Length: 342
Image 1 (cartoon, rainbow, N blue to C red):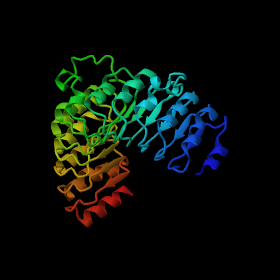
Image 2: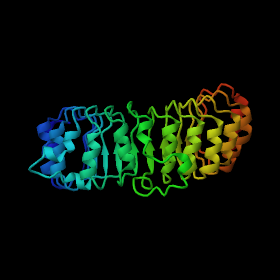
Image 3: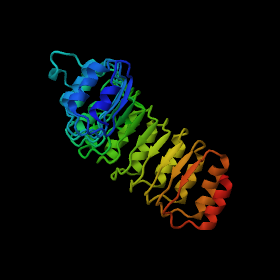
Image 4: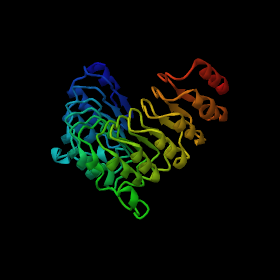
């Protein structure tokens, strides 16, 4: 993509622009998007390393119908791109309609962004802050507890996030006594906290979010069965759960998921070395389970194939099963399972 090519695309009739990786376009041309494409609803500038706050502000000043903005990997973008005080003579009207904002991997983004979004972006439903290393406990706590309309939140790969991010949430024993009014408790549907430093103490409080449909906790190395059991006490609507590379997760977690989460359709247990045949057998109660990953779960044997997994396959709900690295499984058992699933 060159300057001239983009100029030919820009018009008042444009509704969507995907400029992913268009690093050769000058910022002076990108700034013209705001006043040329006022009807724009979708803009993707992912991995455009030249994009800076001036470009972001220009877009937000002119695109008054903007709904989706992707700035992943734009390392020059910081919080000030969304700060109304940095645009004293023109309102950031694009913030009002913005529903999706993705700034993953932007190192200059900090917790101040959450404050600016809370003031301006009242329509936002999806927020991706994955890999924004300067975002810490306090900011995640604000996002979880503020009265916002956010339904999808990705705060994975944040080194500074631990149990403090969840300290304001009611602990599991108080779940039934807490009305959980206000906050984002009943609005949040999808949450990704993978690669965070929190333990059972903090993650167990996620039981407050009773409307959660998907929860990704991959590589949360301090999470154990106790934390998972606490979570599913309240999060009974879960349909997708990612627990890959959580070394403290084993059979008790699988039993709790099977008992509490009747809608469970997708489950990732890759590299969970404590999972055994007993845990997989418990999953046979998950009537809606469609995809299951047991990659490198080295303790499972043919016994679970001939019972639980065969039952799931025969029922017809299980469509995808990942067993790479399961060294105790024999070819004969795998052949039998494959025949049942046809």
